[in-house]
Amino acid sequence: MEADARISCDGCSSDEQLEHENNSQDAHQYEARKPKWWSKLSGRRGTRAQRQTIERMTQCGYCFSKQVLSDFSRVNNSAKHNNTSEHLNEEDNWRRVWWNRSLAVLDENDAATQITPIIDTVTNSRNVQHAQKIELMYSNKSPLVPRKFEQIWLEIGFGNGDNMLANAMRDQNKLLIGSEIHQPGIGAVLQKMEAEMGLNTKVCDSDTEEKKIDTTSMSTKILDGTRSITCQNIRVLPGDGVKLVSHLPCKYLDVILITFPDPWPKEGHHHWRVVQVNVLKEMHRVLKCAGKVFVATDAECFSDWTRKIFAQESSNGDWQELSPCPDRSTWLPIVSYYEQKGIDEGRHTMLQCWMKQGE
Image (cartoon, rainbow, N blue to C red; front, side, top):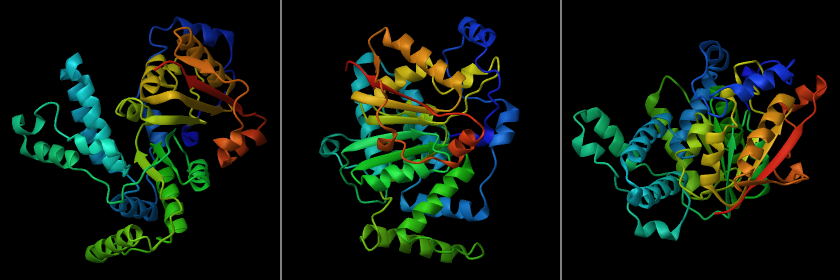
């Protein structure tokens, strides 16, 4: 949910705009780099309390460090670029093990696979500081106790996190991974998680040592099982969820949720929309057999665009639309503030569900 940076959808379904989108050479490629004006509008920092919560929950294992994700992205991209086809399976194995350990997901098959660099990044690096960061990334492991999950869901752009929280509380056997680029939204959902687990302890900025002791104490109480298990099946990843998908191993997710993304309705902005041909190919790769992509939007232009791109890829036998869409109570149980605002302004919510076909 990128509601804070959303543009008005007036006129977004005009024939002239659709014609321009169809004729554009880059209409089906996702552009992660946004314009400066958008970054200024959407790049607000969280409050001081939210930033403190992010730090605490990162140390507890519920939120990923942006630095670790950045280092992983760098190594992962280099491995993809330098690998030959016979090494692709080995590459996917170490990636799967790394994500399982970082997310605290228990998988018996991981014991037989070691996390080793596909490229010798560390030993060949002349930048000692960079080499140390890469070593830290490879050794990353969640402080949480690993457990099995029946399903793994990813919500791209969770906004204030209410929908993710509701899905997590309803079924503790599902792991909910949420990605969000806005720090206020990340801080807000982590604050709610702290409150649910009884971890909303105030931390004094003026005493660093006291802050470390408090955080360790919280983590220990979680691991010892002395706190509520509510929300312990949520992991928050700060950053662009579309870029995250390209870093996940094959057949890793059961469900992907795209809930009220920025529709980018103006002419020439369509390459910033979440749904693109190259994005769908990555989603198809990371979804398990019969995995699903759920889409919710109140922008007609985005709904039409999504159906067009999925239909285009469906001609290759990759996707099938489920109609009618499964009941929203099974995946979108919450009417968020942003959805209610759209309803009050006369817009209605449009839902889609696309199921992966083939292997």
